[in-house]
Every structure is written in C-alpha cells, then in structure tokens.
Length: 440
Ligand code: HAM
View 1: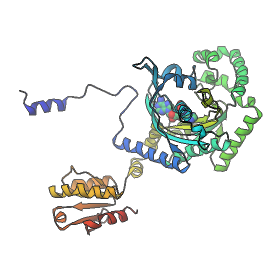
View 2 (view 1 turned 60 degrees about the horizontal axis):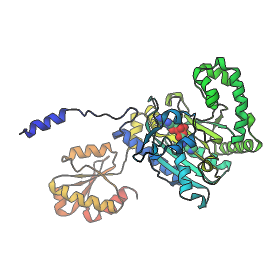
View 3 (view 1 turned 180 degrees about the horizontal axis):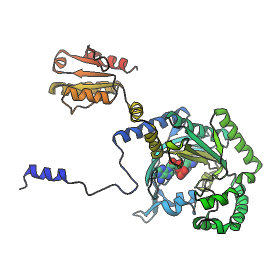
View 4 (view 1 turned 90 degrees about the vertical axis):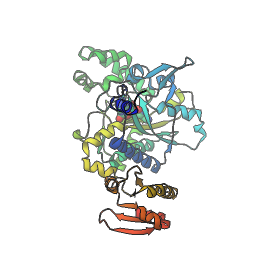
C-alpha cells in the first residue's frame, strides 16, 4: 500500500507534462481582471449605441470563411484551423466572425426585422499564424456590426464607437481610412494596378511578385522597403472610385470631422479580407511607445457579403478590436498604480472570524446577493488580518466584520477602511446599510 503522505508529496512536486498549444495562453489574476475590464467597457459602449449581443458557434463550415474572406488571402490560404468532422464534412474554428454574422443574419431571417440590425460580440478567434508580440493563434475580438443600411453615418458611427472605446480605456488612437469603392470600381482599378506592378516586377519582393496575379491589392500593404518604394508611385484606388462611392466616402469623412475624430487618409489601406467594399479603416495606437505597428482595430463596409452567401442584397459595415493587442498597449502605457486603480473593484468586503461566523456568512452573503448587492469575500481565510489585507487589495472602502460576539447578538461591524472607525449595525439592516455604502 502506498503511504498517503508520500503519494501526495510526489504528485505535488511533479510539474504537469502538458502545456498550452503554441500561440494560446491562460489568462488569470491581473490579466484576467484586465480582460474583463475591457469586456465591460465594450458591453457598455455597445449598449449605449444600441447594439444587441450575439453569440455564434466557434465551429462553422470551412466553406463559409473560404467564400467570404476569399482564396488568395493570408487567412484562408495559411491560417485556418480546418479539419474533417466525424461525418466527413470540412469544418473550421472561426478565424473571424463577420462571415458568421452574415450567415446568422440570413439563417435567422433578420432581414425582416427593423433595419439596420446592430449586433456586438466579444469572442475568441483562431488563426494558425506565426506567434509574435500581439499575435496569437487564439485571440479575442470585440466587434460591432451594422447590417441593412447603406448610409455613411453608419460607417462614421462604427469608427466613433471604436475610437471612443479606446479613449475610454485611456488609449489615444489614430484612424487610418480609405475607400476601395464598389466591386466594379475595384475591377477597373485592378487592371490599372496589375499593369503598373508588372512594369515594376523586377523591383518587387518575391512575395509581392507572386501576389501580382494571386491578390494584387495585397502588394499595397506590404511592409517591405523595396515594395514600399514601388507602391508609393502606384495608381491610387481613390482615383478610380465611381461618383457615388466618392460622394459616400466624403460624407463619412464629414461625419468624422463633425464627431471630432481625427483621421489620416491612407490610399494604400486595402485590408486583408476580400469582402470589403467602399470604406475601410484601421485604428493604431497614437504614440509609438504605446504599441507596435499592429492595428488595434480593423473594419469596413461589406455590402456584397450577405448576398454572396445566399441572402438578399444587404449593405453592412463593422469593425473588430483585438483584445490582446489592447491589453498589450494598456500594460505598457499604464503604470502599475494606474492598472490597480482601473481594476480596483472598490465597494465592500465581507470578513468573518470563527466557525460560527463562517457558517452565518453564507446566509448573509446570499441575502446580499439576492438584494443585488455584490461584496468581496474569502471564506477560506480565518485570520482577520489576512482578510483586511485582501479588502485593501480589492480597494474596498468598507469591510463588514462578523465575529463570534456579533453572531450571538445579531449584529455586524462596518469598518471604514480609511479611518479605521467601526460602527455596529443590526444584521436585519445589513442590506440597507450595504446599499448605502455602495451608493445604490
Ligand atoms: P482583422 O483585421 O482580421 O479584421 O482583425 C481585426 C483585429 O483583430 C486586428 O486589428 C487585430 O487587433 C486583431 N487580430 C487579428 N489577428 C490577430 C492575431 N493573430 N492575434 C491577436 N490579435 C489579432 C477582422 O477580423 C474583421 N472581421 C473585422 C470586421 C468586422 N470587418 C467588418 N466587421
């Protein structure tokens, strides 16, 4: 028979042989708090602008994304987690969710709901990319999508939401914006662009050479110096826009001026997904110290997508914010104190002392919860000192203290954490007292 103590000791010192997969990570503690803090900020701003929450499956038919995002894009050609399901069908972990939204719009008959349909989501995406700073294989996006309206104010509103959400989080961002016109505009432009790129072929990088025939627009946002020199002289898509697209784009810019959102016209911005039409935009951290070269937000109009997937012609636009990238910027730009401040829950802590008090605590905590009042606590802790330290860590302004004596006489102490002054309150009045402390 194995001696219990020895067995325990052995397992405790042995590290797990399993690790997370490359490009994927656990989030907990301070990072977990930061994640939720951003989630709450997203939820708040999306509700304020009238977006309704949507959840869609993580697993979808692979073809949905191949059709939407397009062959020849990095995401479809290299990054999708595709595999065969047990019934032999080709499924994949969603690399993004705009295609899922267009599918859900069609499947759920949303075209017969009052238009536009405004949806938000906060969800994990999967791309088998080369992991590096701010680039993961499983990452999260906060997104807003507006379907059923072709109006420049929709595009402007989406940019305003993304811009203000970042500002609320303390990140100054820069909006890069362009228009890539209608599918027809783009076809005309592509003839011109391909002709130009072919004439400069020998100056281009090997990757860009391949893209001339595969996906010439991608050459425009190459980060390689030799390509940049060629791209600077390339014909600009804005010159090829139809009258309507030009007018639409000008209106988007006017709305942004009106809303006080600064932007930079960026003729080379074309985005890496095929479904875009007209407005495309990306948001970057304003200062170099705040982040890297990677976009915090990407979005644009996708007027053709719903129809392409078998629905009625439905104009639409949206954006997605990369949560890990936002977290990266926040971690770099905020001092530890600022992070503590932002994440501090404040409010009230509940401390108990002695076995009887611990038992009574469960009852009282439930009473508070039913009244909609949330208080921090850690029932596993026995010492008052440890619990008061925890209360301080949580930034609690007050701590309720329940000891043996209080259990017996039906009272509870309320301690002001700053002054240390304590007052005695009848347990029956605890909900009212806590409500007052929380300012509710
Ligand atoms: P996207 O540009 O592919 O657009 O992604 C949007 C944002 O997600 C990026 O700006 C970035 O912050 C974040 N992101 C992308 N890939 C990664 C990664 N591997 N690791 C960490 N973060 C990443 C879309 O996904 C479109 N669905 C956006 C959209 C919504 N367009 C219209 N509606």
